[in-house]
Length: 123
Image 1 (cartoon, rainbow, N blue to C red):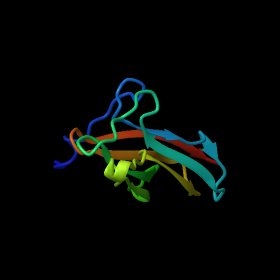
Image 2: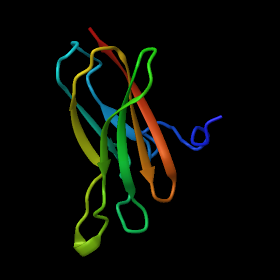
Image 3: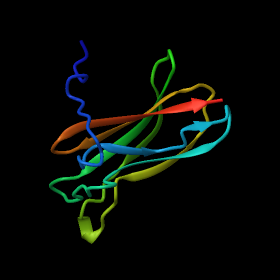
Image 4: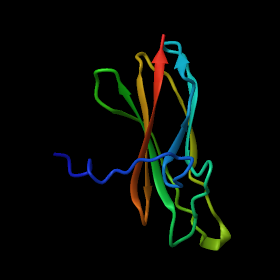
């Protein structure tokens, strides 16, 4: 059994501020570049303070019948130092050859790991 498997939390991002949101087209053409926005805090803002913040978000692709591939990795390190803040939001431009799932994994320094996924059809 996976050590991390039992610690990764999920939920509906509309009601849980820690769940990463993935905005991507439902379908794309093979080899076509498209944009994926992945972030935390669409419906409910997540705090962004020294005490409580999103440290990072990773974006993966899991092709049908395949293993996960990391597509993007975003770290957020300005949490109030010198009155500067960064919001946990990134955009990746990707191209795929197969259908599968886009998966985002975020890390809150207090509440741990959170995951969300969306299907993407490649034609």
